[in-house]
Image (cartoon, rainbow, N blue to C red):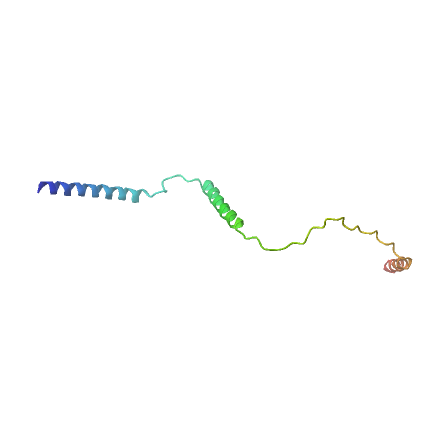
Length: 100
């Protein structure tokens, strides 16, 4: 029948068009003909890595630790250093004389 032959010819033409599109896509090499800025790609990579790091750092669980209470009163002061005893000063003078 002539209609069946015509339908078959249309199907073959569609398949040839599809095969041509596939052949063109394979031969053109997607992404290879485009000018890519390496600095831009590195910046985008660093941004993605930073986003991933931020996500990992924010997902850290808080430990259940009880901290001591903060003192509410006045803190004790440090007393002045007691003066050296005269005996100690004499011993130091003797050591200095011996060392020189």
